[in-house]
Image (tube, rainbow, N blue to C red):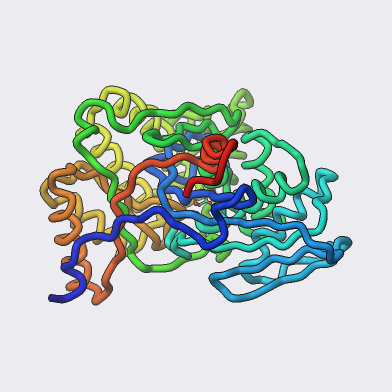
Length: 400
Ligand code: GLA
């Protein structure tokens, strides 16, 4: 039988050789349920952590240098303790960026050997980069004997990516990977960084599962499209603030205010802002749907969110639209949407548990037939973030 008809892959707990020690720090990946491109204009996001992991193992060394190893890339980068050079354009920029941001705070860890490994898919929109950053931050902080809060660690990792990798991401990924709680999604207000853990298994939702489907279309947010959308959005936000000085950011804005500014901004800015303003409302409604255990409503909100990403934010692509459209017509599917930065990457699907295997087989088969691409699929549970995992392991080993 052809591979595409085989059942889904469920991520299995990742066990890295040598990481079951008190020096091993793990950080998960994430999938965003709803609230896309809202995290750099003060909006709301509702992601959860999923069981793919980066493991950062750290050891002291008598050499006067910092060494970064990647098991996956089979590469090593060495830096002198005084080194403050720019990034080199490969995997090592993510952990070195974290070191740089610690140094900016005056934290100079003693010399170390840091080894990174893991199983987070690259370029799939599941936040492999933020997972590396957070695992690295946990390891370096422990090694330096410094404790920072979640509200300090996540922005530090975001700054590492913004400043050192030159990737203009928001705060969502680093925050959920740090602060998530098993069995819950994380509702984050990206302006105040206040957050709530929302259970994902109330009422009818206890009979559903989250299926992630990778379109296998790769897109990096360091390439131009994400930054361009962000600039268009921020240009619209500036015009709204001029018209309504009490607005702090788009997180406060309403559609009727946007409509009154339509003539003052470009058609692109108008559409990008409309996506974000309506998306913030959908996140609030999604929280209520989750608390009420209303799978039907949550699914509808996901489909509406996808339409808004496709038509207003224009960050989808043909392959992802096909996956969402196909999924939404399959039995047991409540809703589906593009997740993450977009322009490829993954869809997130809310599916009746009894039908999950049949759903996955049908979706894979349709995609293979249409694009000759066999998509990876994962049935995901919500797991703890890096800090929760560290807490549960504090008296013992890191539990992978
Ligand atoms: C990427 C970024 C996030 C967020 C999403 C879109 O994942 O890293 O900060 O902006 O895109 O919601």
